Image (cartoon, rainbow, N blue to C red; front, top):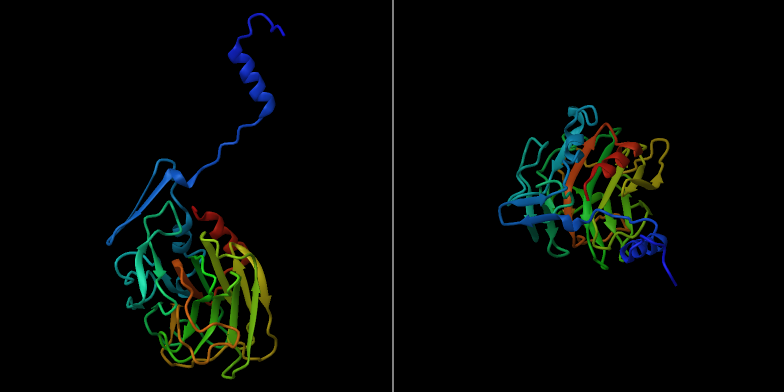
Length: 299
């Protein structure tokens, strides 16, 4: 077979490649990023890394008013004393490993890992009023998690003490990798749960959020990776959650050893890595806001 004059072998090869593969798709790879942790710091280097808008979203009072800010711990560094919003910066930990690779590539903040199912990290003790857990006050908890666990466990919960005797508002993972949210109705042993979304025990980073109503007549919406996946509505004056009154309470990441944990929830922590832990009150995050937060993250 002869070829047209002036057409080289190289040109013919390029022509064949063009026919066989009319489009060359080039994707960005996480291999472009370098995320290195030491005992004291986390260093991110990336030639193509753009500045993230994730953290600036949380510092903008147009998104979260100052009066609604409860807990914002980036879970970074050799201690967890750098909680951005809590007036008291004292966190307690047990069975955790600090300075782990974080969820956000374009950010120098590290993360915290639960080394065992008994591990936990607890916010400073505070009153119900300080954490905005009032009869009609809404609450949103939001965090990133990475796990490969097939044992399941508690990711976060509200309790009357860190790793204490009773808890409520439990966000947990089952043995198949599905996210659940469970709550105790009032001071009774009656509980309810919602679940939805994809399995998240694949080792990747996933954003989990729950927007809750008040303990009088409040339900909840569960979000996974920016999407609403389940909801519960509670009407009338039904107490949707435990009322801790003025007892000192804490949000805990991981194990709470709660003897009055909602019946569906596990009693141990989820082994995995956690990052960017946020709790706000009064102004619940909307579905559009959660979607924006997820889209703004550099994963």
